[in-house]
Amino acid sequence: MTMSLGPYASFIVTSYAAAALVVAILIGWVMLDHRSQTQRLRELEQRGITRRSGRSATDPR
Amino acid sequence: MTLIDLANPTRFLALTARVLPWLAAATIILLTIGLYQAALAPDDYQQGATVKIMFIHVPNAWLSMFVWGVMSIASLGTLVWRHPLADVAAKAAAPIGAAFTFLALLTGSLWGRPMWGTYWEWDARLTSVLILFLMYLGLMALWRAVDDPSRAARAAAVLTLVGAINLPIIKFSVDWWNTLHQPASVMRMGGSALDKSFLIPLLVMAVAFTLLFVTLHLAAMRNEILRRRVRSLQMMQASRIAFSSEVAVGSREDNASKEAGAA
Image: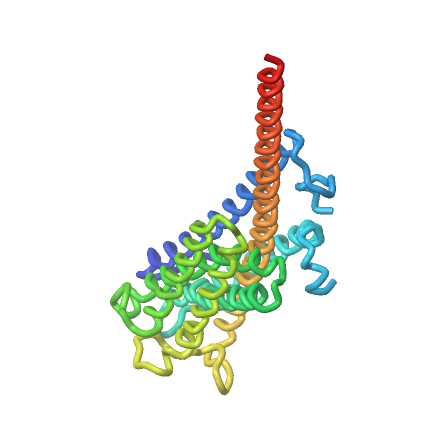
């Protein structure tokens, strides 16, 4: 089954492509930010800077 | 688990670690179903195939206002109840809300060109959504401009609550003014004006995008909590360095005075 988008196909395809791109950027931003913060916390802990509780700052428990 | 239980960031992190994979899976499944249904939806008798743009434009337009609503409730949490995670929630939601508002403006513009004959018209609905987008950007700039998160939180909360005035203006702009934008066709008195073949994919896409927001928001809140832990550990490190250098200077001065006394 083929989908016909008619004479305005470029507008429809651009809309979906833009939505996919923006959602991909949001997901990438969240994932890279998580990696960056976790990395910085590990570096600080390796230098002996720990939380008062003594638990790892990256530990969700 | 109550809201008070979630006031503990560590408990919140544990919850997000458990919930995020399920939310992400549910989002992917619903988005796939929604996109499939959108692809199979028939052409509209007036709009033709451009009606397919509505399946992403409308959910993003709804979310642009919904996210500001979430931020407004979080701002009340900051100012009234002083919930420790309220400003984390507000700050984390702003970039996601800005992205959804940008998509609503862009896809609306791409729909408007073939249907209205113009990409942009300075009418009440379009202009009020553009103002909402600029307010999102302003709020993000404010968060970045103030170093201390608690000071930034109070200023951002006030700005968010003032900006919430724009939400009813956006919603009712099509009723209050004579605009190019069509009036509400889904949420209106007397039920939806849409045929089921359009309404079902639209609602599935709306739920899918809402789940996407919830997933991204929880993940961004988790990141913000970790960022604040980094900040507090860095401050702890800085104070340790300052203390040890003060001790070193103090002991050098003591030695110098002892040596001077001995001489």
